[in-house]
Length: 263
Ligand code: NAD
Image (cartoon, rainbow, N blue to C red):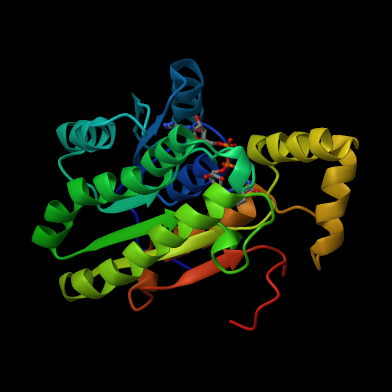
C-alpha cells in the first residue's frame, strides 16, 4: 500500500530510542523527511545518522528537554527553519515515574504535567497555524493503554494521559474542517528501555527479579509476549498517512489484546 507520505515533513518528539525512534524509522522508510528531538544529544545524533543512512531522507536532530518552558516551540521553530513546514506531528516524551498517590510530591506532579501534557499542548500550538494554512495535517499523540484501563501504581501516567486524550478529542473536532486529523496511539507493554525501568521498579517494590515482573505482564497479555517497537511504528505510520484521511478523534491500542474493555 502506498501511504502517500513521500516528501512530507514529520516532527517526531522524544525519538532517540524506543517508540519514538520506531515511528521515525517507519516514516523515514516511507520517504518522510524528519525532525527528531530528545534530551541526550549524543544518542539523538547517532539515531539521526542511523536513520539517514538507512533511508536516505534528511533527519534534523534538535536536542531539547520537552519539559522546559519554551523548548517545544523552539523544536518546531528549528523544524520550520530547516524544512519550511511540518505536515506530521508525533507527540511523545519519556514516561513519568511510577508510584501511587502517597509517593508523589507536588513537584513530581508539576514536572510530569510539563512533560506529558504541556509539551503536547505547546508542540500542537506551534504546528497548527502552518497545518491550517496548507489545509492538511496529521497530529498523533503517543499516550498509553492506561487511558482505557488504568495501570496499577502509574498514578501520573493514568491521570495525565487522560488529560491529553480529552484535549485531543476536543481539538480533533476543531481542526477537522482544515483537513487535520488528531489521533492517539496507545502502546501496551513494548520492549523498550521504559519497560525495563518499570520492571525494575516493580522488582524493587515486590522483592522479585525484573524477569519475574516481565513474566507477570506476559501472563496478562493474550499474546503472551511484549510488543516490539516496530509493531507500534507500523500503525503510527498508517495513522499519519494520506490513506488515513477519514480517521480522526480515535485512540487505538497496540497491546497484544491487554485491554479488557469491549471498545
Ligand atoms: P524510552 O525510555 O525507550 O524512550 C523515551 C524517549 O524519550 C527517549 O528518546 C528519551 O530521550 C526521550 N525523552 C525522555 N524525556 C525527555 C524529555 N524531557 N525531553 C525530550 N525527550 C525526552 O520510552 P518508550 O518506551 O519509547 O516510551 C515512550 C512513551 O510511551 C513514554 O511516555 C512511555 O511512558 C509511553 N509508554 C510506553 C510503554 C512501553 O511499554 N514501552 C507503554 C505505555 C506507554
